[in-house]
Image 1: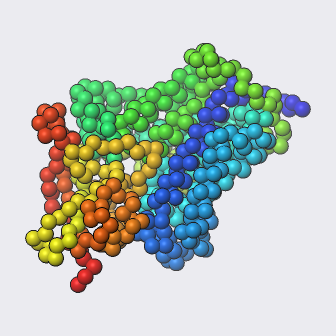
Image 2 (image 1 turned 60 degrees about the vertical axis):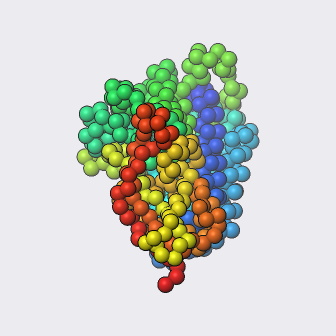
Image 3 (image 1 turned 90 degrees about the vertical axis):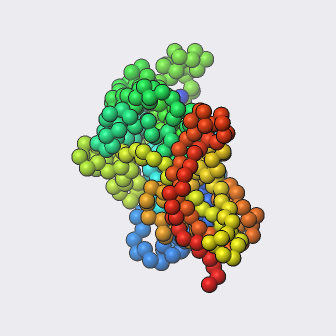
Length: 480
């Protein structure tokens, strides 16, 4: 039966958008749960740097719902992570989408709750904006329905509203923050000082300064003007989405920001119509074969959820136009209707904490060997690798540590794990100079890094040039 309300509820021209949204968000969940399965135990497990059992003992009120509220075990964590991988993989394959609309809804809600359970006990290692974004994206796309019903327009609008908060929030935090965004010089520094450079970052840094200024102008247009056009249906919204996708692709090419940019690209497909895709790519079908109309019960469910998310988004809307704008802030325990933003300030110089160890008895006359991390700069001759959308949590925290972020709670335990030659901790690193044997002492030193010039690279083969700044952590030993 066709209900009168279905004429504005059913968005028949957005079936390709739904396909990308559902499978793309699910694919990011696969990466996120794999990252958790590989890294959570050494960072936050029973014998981790910030053990969750200790958090549960001292924290009367966690910041939100979690399966681990009363009990945590590493085995339970792995069950949660691999269950998430399995559910997300089924959505990537499109299996739940073959059933009625409540089947993919339950699958995505399961991903949302499982990952929210992890984030809410993840402490500083899960304190990134893209964690919030993935949680909110998973909940929102849960209500896109299945192949048996047309895509619901209210949910597509909610996804666009999420992209708007993400992009416009990032644009406003830049304009209100560091002056280098206003005088167009931010990219003189950013490619070199970003948290985790990739193979293209040095090339991007060495581009002429006029190109860097054009990059900033393009960023301002993409984040301060284009987001409003995403709400315009048809070709205008579709072209605006392509602008967002193009700018995010450049960030993917030139840096390692976990799944932030990839997930933004996926979400930006929400306003792209099937007719636009067919005009650009004639091989793209106009009819993807979904149901002709949505049942009343489904429209009621979607309507209630839409109103709920809009109500929860009110604080984020106020935050966008506040002089004291918050960046990456959640206003409720469900992590819905969040405020987003990134790089309100740009660091001008790159500092790195380099961790070293020795087997010598006397630390003053010892020969010190460096531990190599997988993603963060260390060896000056090693070209940075591409890891995104995978998230190296320890490497990211090391970047914040070099900027002066408090790290005593986890960094000193990290050094102690190195002294113990803890196998699970050493797996987080690229190279252990002691091949699994215990060092006698460990220490940390602070260096100033910069990309080598083209002439320096030809002469020395070094990607980085570094100079020592001083001692970060004095030599430590397990023996007294």
